Every structure is written in C-alpha cells, then in structure tokens.
Length: 167
Image 1 (cartoon, rainbow, N blue to C red):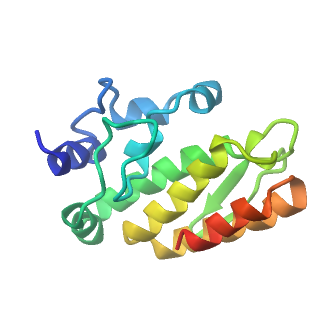
Image 2: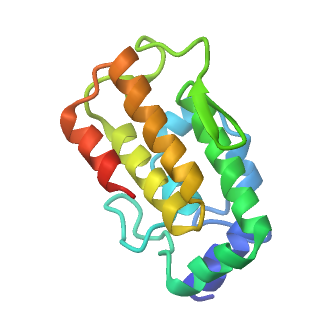
Image 3: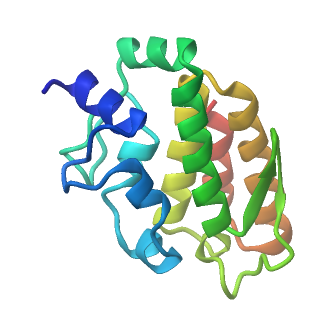
C-alpha cells in the first residue's frame, strides 16, 4: 500500500499504523503511554517532512491535503485526535476555542517545562492542522499554548517562535 492509501485508511479508521494500531486504539491510550511513546504523533498529525523518530510514518502529500479539504470525516477524526492531545496537555476545546483545564499545572503537564519533545509535538500539531484545512483550530491551539505556556509554565522564546512560525 502506498503512502497516501496507508494514511487515508488509518484516518478513516479502516487501516492501521506501522505497529498495527488503529486510530481509535490510540485515542483510548493513557496519558502515560502518550508521553512515553514517540511513534504515533506522526500518524495523528502528518506533515510533508519526515520526522526524526518515525521513518515508518506516511507523509502529508497534496492528495491527502485535498482529501482533508473535501472530507468532513477526516477533519472530524483529526479534531478527535486533537482533543486527545489537548486533554493530555491539560487543555480543552469547545468548538474552535481552546482553554486551560482547571488542573493545568507545571507539576503535572510536562509541556509547561522548558524544552522537551512535547514542544516539538505541539509545533507539529499546529502545522498539521493548518495544512489539513483546519486553520481556525491551528490558530486557536497556537494562541492557547503561547498564552498558557507563558502564564503557567517556563516556555522558551525559541519554542514560542516555532509555534508562531508553524502557521
């Protein structure tokens, strides 16, 4: 199966990733798993460039971007993936508004600490949302992480700049 067919089958919920996981399997996993596993984010939030950690993940191509543009189901599945990651980050979404959960704190949400792989993941998520025809969600996430990261955490100017440049 080629790159486009693999990613579309996965995102329709009919296929699996390189480890046999289906989309709804990943949605059901624990925060511990989301933190310590590094090869799923590329499937949930594809971008055109290959990542350093998962050479098995498909890339976002113009054909896949067109599918996201024309198929509400794909965008809805990506929104569900976003909701999973937002909960993991101590954030929540109401339509296209993203806010902090009352429990958001630097003690329990690693992304609020300086650096780390979660800052790279957040950059990927913002960029993927924008490229997959969800610019309002990309912008909402961008603003939420910059605002909450600076108010509740120790987020570097470098990370903030990456988040700003992701769109």
